[in-house]
Image (tube, rainbow, N blue to C red; front, side, top):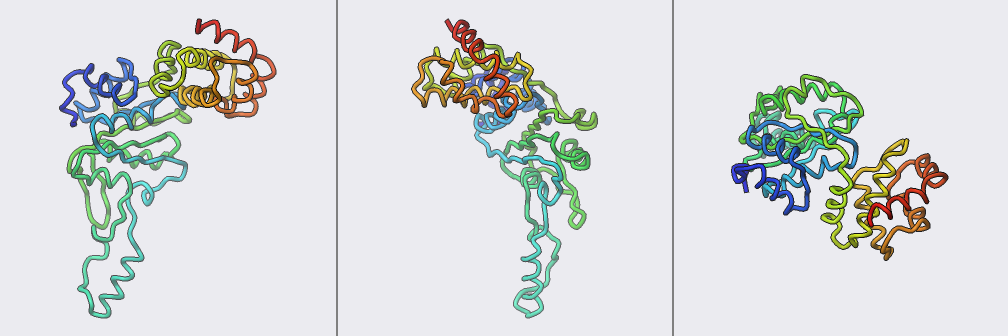
Length: 295
């Protein structure tokens, strides 16, 4: 299936739903435009709200390969774009000296080790390129991305400029640990993914964890929504709600009980300070509120 297979936003939204991804109208619209305009898409939002999963779902619904570049501090061209296969070059030099092979350009395509960005640019087949957590990369790497996102090309000094055989679908994600530069944002469509409403979060849990009883899914989502209202170091995302609901199902729970909630909070909260704050003050009240909300 190609980008042209979707003539309306509703068709794309339905396709994503078939791949177990519940996209609201706003997200479906910007994904549709990214396909039609062949323009990179920047998804920002808190961790765990479904940014990375959106790119994965797009690859599935399009029937294409997902190429993922996980960004981190210190990411450089050798790990993101290409590097030279020095051991192969050395072997070739030795073989040439012995006369068993002909001399050829040592800094040519045959000796390139292709990393995610170059792999996506050179692909003859349609691909989805996920540049994940771009906010974790350095300013220098962000500047390097400008050429890729503007012209879908990469310049290798020893070879020249390599343009895309066909433009990949590009999705960048950011948790906003730092502000991205305007130059990068101008080259993308932008969409902020927020935490969902309670009703929508229950739908997502039911979609991603169909074995979880409906009442338990509703209570788990309501409890997590209550956690997000607290002053926590790291509020839980939808991904944590799904993981927790699956954990509760694995324990055979039919509904929330304070003792079970306390023993499984590590599936939801990932900071000791948050665990301690909830256990000390708010747990029983949150459980009661969640049970009431799911009636």
